[in-house]
Image (cartoon, rainbow, N blue to C red; front, side, top):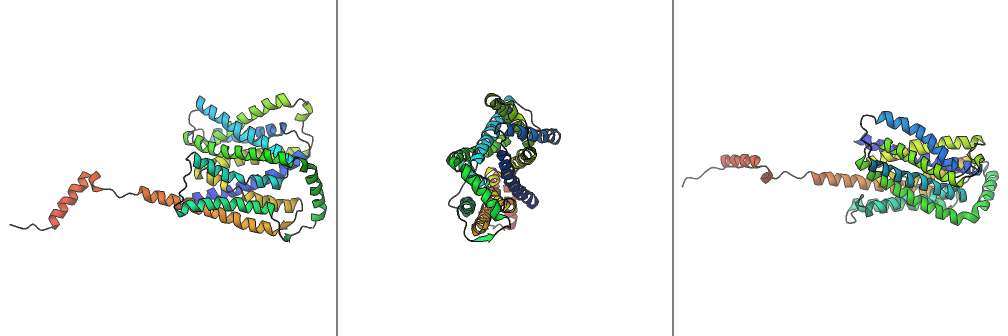
Length: 363
């Protein structure tokens, strides 16, 4: 049981590295002028080439039968989790920056928690310590990631190339500043879609226990939807051409790692730990993006990053501890002592034993 929990937490931590790297690669691809409709088509085709065979061979014996209702669920997962989520993400990232985008995604745990509670998938007991720990953990994680973005403080680490590359980033921010408001609106929609997608996956897995098959069909319907949209709005045939190695590397990383491996890990984690636990690790990517930006782009690393990292890790611990205590309480509640009246044989044996132990008095 401990090994299973350790695997779950390691997988969720690794997932944040995948997400953080995706911000960097997609930003590079967008800077080359790649079409925001063509890029997700190629990315998800690459992911399907990985997920399709993996789902077919690994779940061949245990896969439930696919009904029309299942296909409808897969279509909706593709609409919310691929078409809308990825489309709004690309529009938002194109108008902002990787750090700002990862910071906006910190609202996903809180939104997922709220949706799960409203739909009664997640229970919250405010009169118990485990319920308060989960709520405080979500707030601490979101708050820590927000501090990394909004508060800098003294400089902790300055790379050698910081001055040159900071000038480049300053120019980039000036170019995109005029669309920051629209970028923020796009990213709010993206976060709502991501939260809804996580909760939807949890409900689908209750009735269809083949997570890789669900991911593969979700990816397939996302491709069909994106191709349909691109056919109407992308009139220039040259938009479908890949003109640089940066675009190819970005598509390979986003397809294989983000839309393929990360999607499979996410739905597996949802099945094992629920939607809230799967989303609570997302603020960790803000710290990772800040570190990657410091290394790759030469950005300074500030005291706010240390404070935010501490709050993020504290929040993760509180949520994990709260869920562990909640699970223990549920197990203890299930271990109700067997009443003798529910077992007449045991009751009669107990009565006969008592009669032998208690001496009878002759009147």
